[in-house]
Length: 356
Image (cartoon, one colour):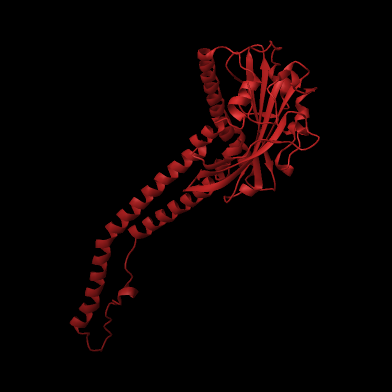
């Protein structure tokens, strides 16, 4: 096995031995505060994903993260992301652990809310191979992404930490999430719940499934060409709580628009109330005599009686106005009822989207 990247070598025995995965925070990059410290990742997004038996962390890197690997590109293509640009891995800054690297990925992603909108998206990545305690070959990959041009996108970054730990039976994939806030926003709680409970778990289950399929395909190819020399067996994977201190980068699109759903909900409620008020006003509308100019003639004692034709004219005008109103009233009522039904339909769709 050979890697395309020159930042690492496919040799487990050469992995730097570390006491804990906290050493991953020592991988220094050119991206400033884009990456949060390893200790921030206390929230596990999905249950551990067991990859096909007999695979190693080297296989995972080769298939998913190497410079010529196509899995992540296919993953983003399935998400309808376009204009993908993958920078090759570059060595981490001086002082970083051996077998580590950094790179930037950019694309145009589609954010769906009231309308679909294409937005630039940037994701910073870093990785490192380590051997925890000298008996746990591990690959750690951190992703930190941010969209542009959408509401609240400049307020946070969505980060994910992917930990691949090798054992005798294969490799276990674990995914941890964190949202790094760059400024305080009133929708902070909603962003956290949406990202860590909904968006990121769904996306990384999808990525895990794609990785399993690709590793199985590679295994079938090797079985035809001939088996490779297997690596020596390694100790078992530690229990889940042993790495408790271990986005979805590409999932910002749904997060930033979650608050828009609530604004949309409020506007639809107000529209429904306004429509209902107009419906009631139209139903009980009457023509005022002051509007038509019709007045009852007053006969004063001793005065000359008013000529009847002069009285009939304003009365006829009033009757004509009442007739027009009565003719148009059903049309207005029907129109308002249709509008109310349309608003109700939009309101139901919004409520369903809010529950997801």
